Length: 268
Length: 267
Image (tube, rainbow over all chains, first blue to last red; front, side, top):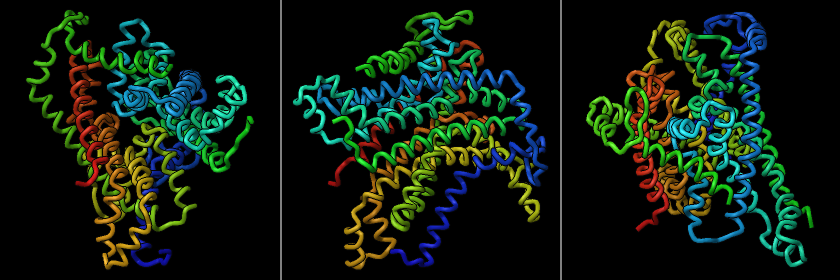
């Protein structure tokens, strides 16, 4: 199987091509963020930090980053908590209507974001909750909770199912068993879900665009700049966004996969 | 049970409200609650709406077929032709772009595809072009692939990695050729992953507005662009709701049909 026949070389070359396609736009953004030309194309101009200086001098951008940070941290906290509870309920209990419960929990990512945006805007406007930071938070929690649930549920699938009942038999209250058996076991998954949901929220632009009003997040700001003319600042803002969200996803995966391979039974 | 309450209040309820709102009236630029089918009849009697509907459906179908075909050799190679360590790293690097700023990646493609962009400069050196790569369906398709290809490869790869190697060995021993093995043994066994990848590609490209807007030039529009135009230009939210409800029904039908096809046992 490992013999490098012509066919295998061709397949490997194809894999490389797919990765080039996937990563080219990301690399391009970093390259042009430090390129001097106003209209990005080749040949490249000279190296400059001008675009970064411009955006760092812009109070609107600082404000957008502040809103984004606030939103993604609140969303990550809430979504991870809700995702954990859902995953635990699915793991521990069987009840009628469980299929409905799970589809309710996992369906949001299949609804187009524009439609979620319109629906949230219509509803929130009706109850006078639109255009505020918490309207973005509420909408993003709906979108992010399923990811958190999936991550925690994968971890719970690895736990020895007898551990928790053992703790109960030894006299631990359900709450104490949760605190000393389940939560320590799930800690890497919880941390990972937190980073992942923070990244999803930090990057989400469609729903945020509909409900945010004047409280623009960074992606909404990018969306609005894009609707105008070519502006090289986009590459600088975009590169910062890439750096932040990619680090979050990388951290999420590293935590999840490193800990998952070494089973831990802390707590008892 | 907090998720049930939360999802009911902020997920199901807004969607139900969307359906209700599609029956409301707009009088003097203000929405008035009511039960009138005027929005539905108005929208459904417009040729423009149906043109957009079929166009969006066709775009999403083409994106689904292209993505599935382009993803398969890659996930196949990653599943069978590389070491487990390399496979893990590939998975790792495919998950990262799925969660990172789609919007900025689309903007990067503009730099490549526009009439004065990187590709056309390169064609120019070769004495070719210029080719119009932006503001047409080609541009839109590049955007759809950017969005969906990593996800499709991941889903296919997970399914392919679980294919029983002994069966492939058996097919080879029984004299089944390489390509024949792929299509008669491996593809049917990885059916779930392939269909799930296709379904998600369909959902994402059917609902996406960024690629058709920024790479496809927004004209002619897709349904999502229609929703945005109808919502942002004035108070015609009930009509946008009609479009949205139509989209959801279409998506649910296609999702249900393909997922039941994926899990159906062979007769």
